Image 1 (cartoon, rainbow, N blue to C red):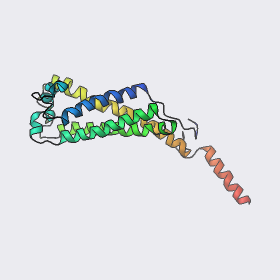
Image 2 (image 1 turned 45 degrees about the vertical axis):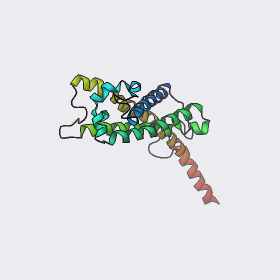
Image 3 (image 1 turned 90 degrees about the vertical axis):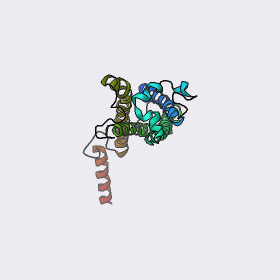
Image 4 (image 1 turned 90 degrees about the horizontal axis):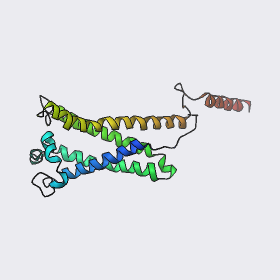
Length: 208
């Protein structure tokens, strides 16, 4: 990219698809958490979240016991889900429907969203692994097969995709920042053109 040639963000289909898919699933998940106890097996809202009848036995942080024990982490995570989802849809709106001056800042919003997603998911894994002397406090009771298929695989997607997307946005933001500063493509500092303009400016001042 030439010095000073700033690029306008071009949304990638696969990134937008991830934002849509993950947001809808997170909305569903958050609804389950905030609807407890009515979303449990014997609750009148259970048909909406029937899949959790199995999952609450896989990840005990989603279980009735965790709710009855007033474990606050689940609801705290769900509260952050709301912020994350708002950021996701804000990115989609800016990237696909906004005028150029707003489109240009959409990578910053997207970057913020996926860094939040990754950090929140990493914390979710760590509180399980570090929650007791033997580790895996809420999922360690599963068989190896169930742990990998029902917990690690689906939850791992929220670590893999966000970090890839964060790198994509981060590189784009960094390149535009370097271009705006006149140092694009030159790790040693300002470009030769910038230095020559600076030197010629000093010469003209001396000759006056």
